Image 1 (spheres, rainbow over the protein chains, first blue to last red):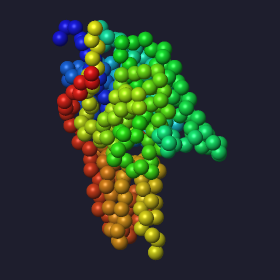
Image 2: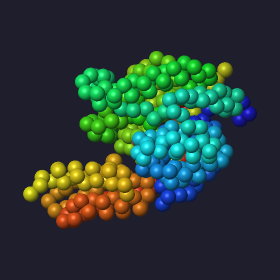
Image 3: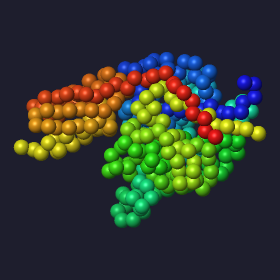
Image 4: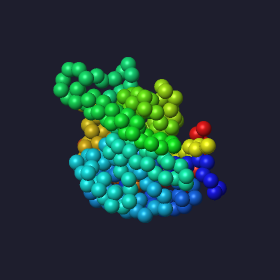
Length: 244
Length: 82
Ligand SMILES: [Fe+2]
Ligand SMILES: [Fe+2]
């Protein structure tokens, strides 16, 4: 137990908290330090992205005995208060990623976490491209910009293990269960391509409530959809080996 | 009479856009004069509000609110990635 040979990552997304469930999720986080070394939140922490909901989330996560890293989801952007919500979370001690990265010390291991909300566009062969109307080009360009930022952040992150934390999905396997028609709004292969190029040990995402937990990028990186309704439990724990 | 698919689409849109709910993942079925709501939400209040929004859009339909409240269970087994 003294020398850490693995990093235990607790992860969940889409907790969608509001005033009516204040205190409930916190109860489920009791004893998390026995089970995990870090908690990662994959966005959609609120329902409507209001500041009041943001404060509920911040209170639920305040002063946890393990480091907490989060990204926001589309719901957290709905009221155009994403910066304020991120501010509330940071005040509560949560590291909020916005297309950048952090390195956390877990036992003797340096764990790098890179990511952000991500965005949609669809999957190779069945996706939008930067062509035609300005609105479509902007949509695709937004995803492209995010993917580039992650690639850069991953390359700059010096760590023993690296995890990508996103809200939108990088692959379609973990969307299985969702209607095919909405796949382009659930994620983009550009995210997977960027991570495959730069390299990582694990990708976590949420957003697809009816999706499937486990998948793999074309480059062989493990992907886990940790949306709360998919997991059916407070959080999942993934152990990454950090052997000599 | 309006086709049931359009009624269902309007209800779904209302649930997504109404400030009381903003819920995107609810499945809506209209069969005759019956309205069925299915899906998962994080609290009972949200379930009730969704029923209200749906009812306001289609007050003449008999509603069956089958939306489930997700029970946040204790974390289970770890997965070891090697
Ligand atoms: Fe969500
Ligand atoms: Fe989402």
